[in-house]
Length: 267
Image (cartoon, rainbow, N blue to C red; front, side, top):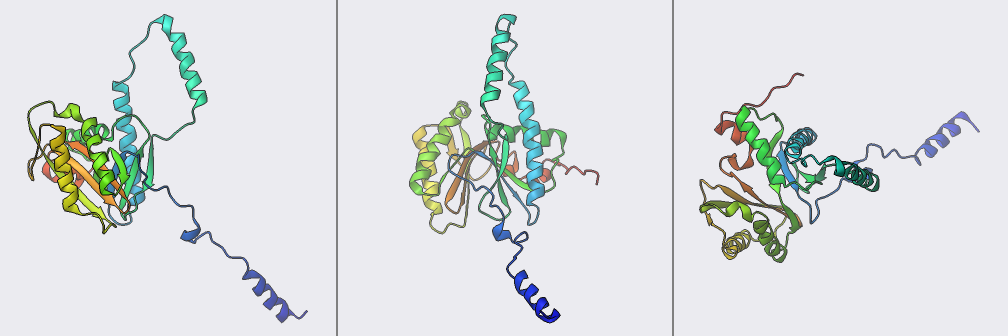
């Protein structure tokens, strides 16, 4: 075979070997948000998703550790110690290691869901984080814009949302035992042309009335916020305290309101 034919043959053979290592369509897909999840919904500017996720991990891990230490089980007497250690060892052997926090594809650009695989409410962790921002006057974040606690994810369907709202209110009923307070609804819909905003707002106001909690709708100076974030076929729902004080859980707005500075870290 001539050198020319050999070269052509080699070129033809090489065409059968396609490198997909840089083809995003061939890469492993990230997990997507699903019904039953809880966690934190974070937003960021375009191109900063990875950096925002790292910041969220750092914050959640640090303040989860603090909260866990404060809620630690009291010391047991010597008679029960050996039995407790035995039970803990058996539990460790029988269970797999699960990450406390896991980033999930939300289905919308510049919006990431941090899934909580812990018993603690995302609201509790978020409150500790924002209290720390205000107390230290340092946000310790550069890329996260919003940091919103989510109690439940359900289908973006009117009937499913109607079932979920009362669950969120009952789960937080212990927060409404004091004097009457104002609430507002933070509603956002992305990639879903079906859901009607007015229908959702009316449904929430009716659910609050049915639960007979001491909450009254308001557009300003609201202590509580009911979060409804619709993303394609899923609906993220949460209830938060200190809604206006925490600048609607917007870290940029918080820094301006409370003269909080963004922490600058060494390069």
